[in-house]
Amino acid sequence: MPSKAGRTNDILEDFLGEAKVDAHPVGSHVLLQLDETSVRSEIGHLIETDETLTSLTADTVTDVDIRAACRAVAEHTDLSEEGGGAVFRAGARCDPRGGAKARQFP
Image (cartoon, rainbow, N blue to C red; front, top):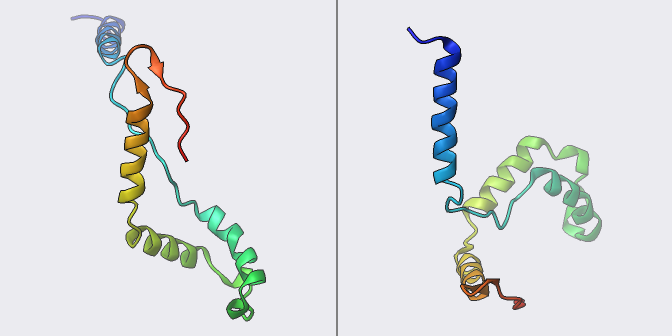
């Protein structure tokens, strides 16, 4: 029966061999993140600038309220046009002759 160290080494060698094959896996890149902490920070600014929110105070808004609001916004926001534009701009920046072009897009 092989020792535990021998089996561990075999497992590590297999893992490292797979890592070499997957050295450049296809990636996915997050373009937007709706952060609940940022939403909480924004509440004070909204109260100051929106007359319809004057009866609200920042400390009356709970984490549950913020989470529900973020989920509602995420469920009802269509970013397909922005996503398609990002894919187009990334594709347009690729230069198979040596890296990414230095094109600027709005």
